[in-house]
Each structure stands twice: as C-alpha cells, then as structure tokens.
Image 1: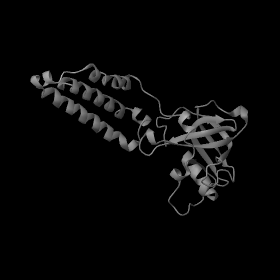
Image 2 (image 1 turned 135 degrees about the vertical axis):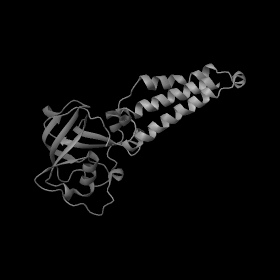
Image 3 (image 1 turned 30 degrees about the vertical axis):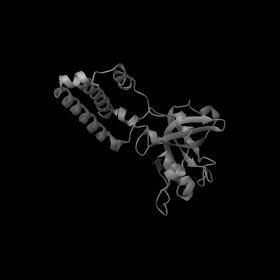
Image 4 (image 1 turned 180 degrees about the vertical axis):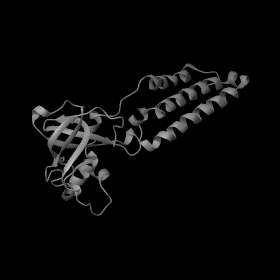
Length: 228
C-alpha cells in the first residue's frame, strides 16, 4: 500500500471515530468515560494521515503499489460510516441474564431505602439488592427504567450494563407482576413503579429473577444512553 492509500485509510478510520465520539452515537458502543479518548484517537489518526500524505515519496510509492486487497480495507470503514447500528437489545439480553457477581456491592451492609418516597434504581441495582440485601428494598416503592423482554413465564423490564464497551455487556431483568393485558410490546421502553415481591430473586445462583409487583407501567421514549 502506498502512502496516499495509507493516508486515505487512516483518514477514513479517524473520521468514523470522530463522528461517533462527537455525537450521541458513542453511547451505543462505549461507556461515557471513553468518549473523549475516542475523539482523541480519531484526531490522532487524522494527523497521522496528513503526515503520511505530505511526506510522500514517489519512488517509495512505486515500490509499494496499492493492491485491490488493500483497497478492500475501505469497505468495512465505509459501512461503519454509513450504517449506524443501534445499541444492543433483547437478543443479547436473553443470553446474558442477571450476573449477580458483576452487580454485587462491596459494602458489607446496605441500609434500607427511605420510606414514603419512590426510589429510582438501576435494574442491576435492584437485582443485586434482591439477591443479597432484600431487607433494604422490602415494602419500598421503586421505579425501574428499561426495555421489555418476554418469555413463556411473563414479561420483564430489562437493561444492559457495560463497564467499558458493548462487547462486555451484561443483562439484568426483573419480572413484572401485572396483568397480561398490560404487557407492552417487546423492546418498548417503560418505567415500572412498584414494590419487590418478597423472596424472589434471592441468592446468587440466578435460578429465579426478582419480581416487581407493578403499581404503574408507563411507556417512555428510548433514552439517549441505553446502557447502565
């Protein structure tokens, strides 16, 4: 591959990284703290491309002609620039459900939630509390935000959590105890308000999901940041 081709490929990769990092699209792939490293990586690639372009050596280019296979490297880059895959959803959630070890807290004890108010909890927080510290959420009103998944046993409010990027995503879900008629469509985002069904989801073996006795189920727009 000659220097002109190298510069073009580096520019294309840098442009994709910049486009993802400078828009809300980054939230589909990486955690918030990785946004600016992604932008800096894109800028560095563009600078390297300019360096290669202005430091070209014609004789060197003659010794290293660009082959068709080398130009084929541009195909996935063009696809990545044109096609914008959505965040991971129900398909992944069904295969990576409720990893309690990943959601567990390091604190030796958790104080009960305050009474008389509705607490907004992450789905992963609720799963961990039900498994390990049920007394903290017993008879407390909580509100969970997530998308709907379902199986033969009912439907769930589900959320994906990432530590670094979408490749390490873990899924957490809570069964919603409500009438069948109230079940929203799969992948619909909802806010579910209710109380923990005491005794469900206890332990770390993952044999049973925690359940929420729903007092209210409200459909909401898809949030910009879909991962916890």
